[in-house]
Image: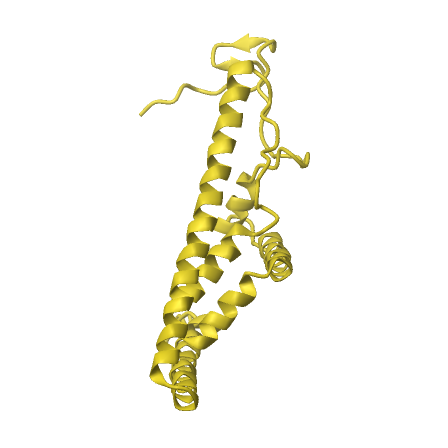
Length: 198
């Protein structure tokens, strides 16, 4: 009788993958139930008007957030181009709407587009600036905690190492190559590297 390594166990399913389908099913049932309750209390035309009004407002919100995102992108490119031409470091971009949490504004518009009263209420809640700001701060803290706890060598760790924060002065890991250092056959002396060959 030989003893070997125990058989590998199947990877554990994450909580999100376990509960997400159940949550979506419950949400759909609640949406349908709430629509029937409102239709019984009023009439079908009122429900239709509520759904169409939510969709129209959702399209308008998404359009506004998209224009704001495009304006931010355009101004960032223009500032980078002007800095490259003048040879100076680019100034921090004046991100109009960054404190407004443009992504949450788009999410609010998307929730308004979805047919249903619960999603409309959540979308309207995301249109309130203090709610968006609070959710944005909570999301930033959660992402920062997750990135800080990433094991070395993971994708999250690589992303954390690659992030650059020029405006707030955080240190960026990297290597400084000086032009005035004594040069050897393969670069600065003290670190002789062979040429890269295929």
